[in-house]
Image (cartoon, rainbow, N blue to C red; front, side, top):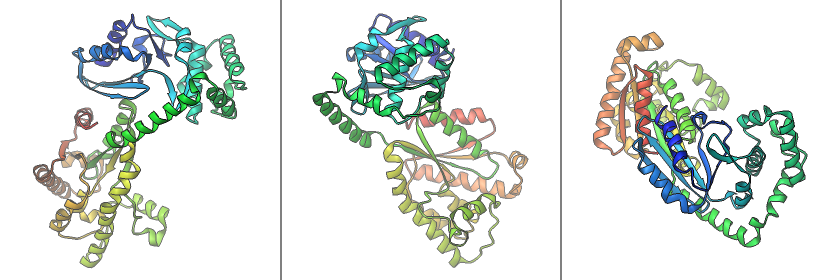
Amino acid sequence: MNNRQQFIAHFFSEIANLDYTLLKFIEGKVEAIDAYADLDILIHPDAIPYIKSIITNNEDVESMDDLKLSSMQQFFLFFKDGSFLQIDCLFKLIRKYHVYLSNNYVRENTIVRDGIKCCNNHVLFEHIMLFNQLNNAGMPTKYCHYFGTLPEEEKQQILSSFNEKYKAGFTMANVVAHQSEFKDQVRNFIKRMPENNFAQILKNTSNYFKETCTKFWTQRGRIITFSGVDGAGKSTILEETKQMLEQKFRKKVVVLRHRPSMLPILSSVKYGKSGAEKRAAEKLPRQGNNTSSISSTIRFMYYYLDYVFGQWFIYFKYILFNYIVLYDRYYFDFIVDGKRSNIQLDSKITKLLYRFVHKPKLNFFLYAPAQIILARKKELSANDIESLTSNYQDLFANFSDKYDQKYLPIKNIDKTETLDFIQQEIKEIL
């Protein structure tokens, strides 16, 4: 068992005497809880100090962050072995400003399964359905599978009970198909609940907008860049980092290629946007034959403006909404490898102008010996690989001394070691 699994088992033994309900528990046994799942626990706010003490006194927890909101308190646990756990302690079941299930109703329908206090299947189905209906979404696949494999009699009882209560006509088929033709009936029922009277709606609305505004100022996204010569394994590492952020740390992630792309590829004037992107994807790197300093200056200034002004576009579109932005290549290519963008300019100029470009929190340069890269891709000569690698390392060393952000070269031989190093660095900025 890893640190996360050991902590979960210990955690539930410690809170056994508390009045709580673990929501969305379909695994049957605590050790089978999905490796990337959060713990959503309905609990009274008075229990929070005790829960916090369980976390802070656990020797496997390397660090913890928490976020207190009016309807819940979230704990983000980073364990010494690299595993991660998010615990959402919910004080009421609310989406934006509508309570969709009352606390008393959930507690009355709480059962004990494998020593864990959780919802019975009727309320579990109700909870999943209501939450996703309020989010204009269908039931997630894993819950469709869970309810779909229940005994037929129990499945029909759950559906009949739900449809009778909410005056709907769901079948398991349209639940699985994510059809929402009964969402108006469901929402009308929720609006009529005593917990959603006029005074409560005003209070909940006020809390929702206040907390949304607070998040804009306290929860910002991050920008992380990945650089490397072709064949250094950059694309593989970037994709696995994306999956790690989404699945393990539950982050929203967007991947951008080389630049903000507020401005289109220059060749789109001739070939159109999709045509230009297709040609850029199919064309081998460093194949341009531009030798004109005037043409190179025009090309560079066009892309430079994209970096200078596009950084605000990225900020308002992603960073402000707590996205992690991963760049597959960044401005450093213009300094070290302008030929890749068909630009021939003195690197001193492009390096000097970096001072006006946004400097991401984390910048990784992946490299490997030339013989390993050539075994993966034969797009560059050994001399080019060694020269570019040396220049990137010198640049990152210079920027590490000059700027506060991190510029980290990584020898990418063992993928697991590379990803472990990247994860450790990312944990420090989340």
